[in-house]
Length: 316
Image (cartoon, rainbow, N blue to C red; front, side):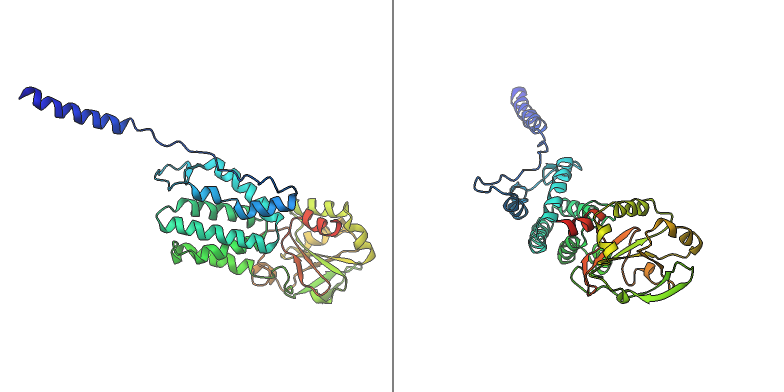
């Protein structure tokens, strides 16, 4: 009887030791896309990457681990780094392909979240906002972020409360979209004699109009000013083909007046006398500086774009 009682105890110990010795699955690097051998130019490569970037990721088995350092089994640092690559790929594709890629991405993420694995969806939501909506991001692109917002707002796995802040962001991004007429507004221009002239945005005549929202105490504004003054845009401005509206939207007119001499005389130096631009009701300005490039008909060509993208538009 003594030995019979001992053997079940030994068997139980073996089972428990076997369970405890089971090693946790180690995080893996983000599975990279392998380009087919027939692709031999950048345009084709970018298109293929945009269409297939996430295929291997979603083919991974469902993650059971609750560790905070993994996203669907992928090391979180590797995941974030690879997302940065994906973000840059999207900026190199056309809007149609970028929208298709982002839409399909969120459909797959929502499916995972519906099955109980929400971390990938939440991680991508955060990264999309960081790369495409953050005013200081080098790849800031509200058109791409609108595609992401559409995916977020359609996600069945998210509650209405979780979607609330994204509904507001969608409203902001939907203002003055690229390809649409820019919202008109009044401004007061400071003339050389110190007097003011009240005009509207649509009164400006030129093949292109660059709205440069700025303020006197903004270091980034000063940097952009110097970049433009040393760029090929100078020739277009001097010919009158490109009109620049340096627009101030706050109240301290004393500092604003004193800053006039830093700006080229060809530029329209103006402020918002009605103080309606800073309330997000017309342009949804989230940060200063902000650059908008418009065509002759005042349709938006580039919205809230980095200065290098403005310059590239004219020289590429």
